[in-house]
Image 1 (cartoon, helix red, strand yellow):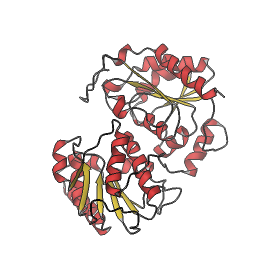
Image 2 (tube, rainbow, N blue to C red):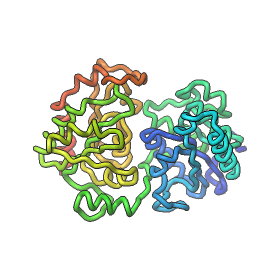
Image 3 (cartoon, one colour):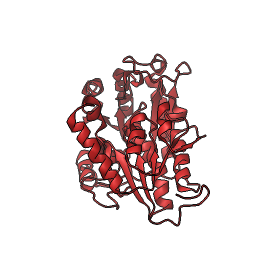
Image 4 (tube, rainbow, N blue to C red):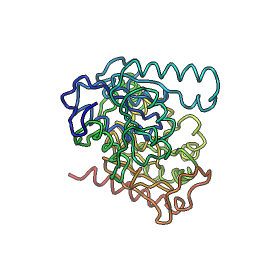
Length: 363
């Protein structure tokens, strides 16, 4: 174990495990910090414990070693937390947890960085067996801090900044924030080509707008009927409008599609990454696709209600955030939209979109 002020830059054999199991937006918020560690210390061995459904954010399908298909990590450790939560006392859960523990311990990590701050992530960090378990001094779930061996007091307002502070504490040196590295999947790029009818490219396709009407719970969801009016306005402005209709979100997409101004797309996560790389505008609430667009540097309009955009809002890209002064931070998972969210009109959203479009086209 290094002294407190000793830099790890010369330790090419240093082995680090990142624990950030989910969800989509949270993993995307963690990526700039882990990217910064990768760029500052390219010889480190970096593993990541993640839920299987989010692995495409870290590695393209079939990736085995670090490279363009697996830019951040050298090893993924899968923890199917959703299934474990449904069957916490089953033999299958016990066997799978034991297998994950043994797999992580076999890697002999020098440090474990918990970027989730939850009891479940802290338990997995402990199970990995490293001497250093680093987490936030005031984690999201307070009991988690008892499982950390090192607690870092963060000062940043945004979670991206907080994660960078935690990463810097592990690295032993000040890290610079940078763009998140996301995998490049050629098959998903070909799918995007088929959808957009233009050659595969890593840059944006002009005049393609993506609307993502879903969100983690009802209080964060702006009404689909209002998104429908936005889709009509974007179509009048010459945009081709696409709607991300994730599995289970078809009822949210239906009113938007019914206008005839937009087309629904059901994409896998690698396909959504490829598609988002090439849109010229994304409109959504506080949801994974919005944070994906931010990670890829695409302009976004964020429609916020009970979550605080100063902590969870768009970061690292051109954006406009709409939020009512009457909305208060509230993470209780209520099914109905936040009252403040309902004060935001389609005209407000289209005005914000026009501002971004004007900035994009300015010389």
